[in-house]
Image 1 (spheres, rainbow, N blue to C red):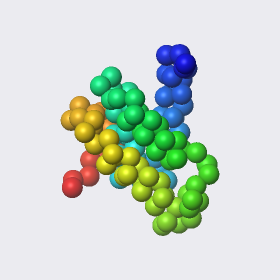
Image 2: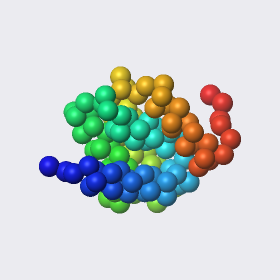
Image 3: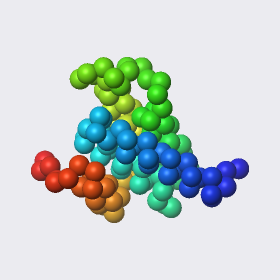
Length: 116
């Protein structure tokens, strides 16, 4: 069983890796990843959804990929697909509160908000 302290440390490490990727991966991918990141921390997110989310976020931050992230224009397409599939699977647990947390972090990392 994983202790609360170990879980907090792994979450912090995951967040730091996402922050490093933000500039390369782009706002749309990081926005979806932040939805998942904040959803996994929410107490009402069930264990099965947390496993889906951790798998998708791990795929995003781990160096091995189906399509290497260094390739221009296509490097993050597989990451986006995995994040989008996870988001579709757990979308019920993405609350307005979680979206607001992600929006605030995006503003901090990217600056002004992009209108849809």
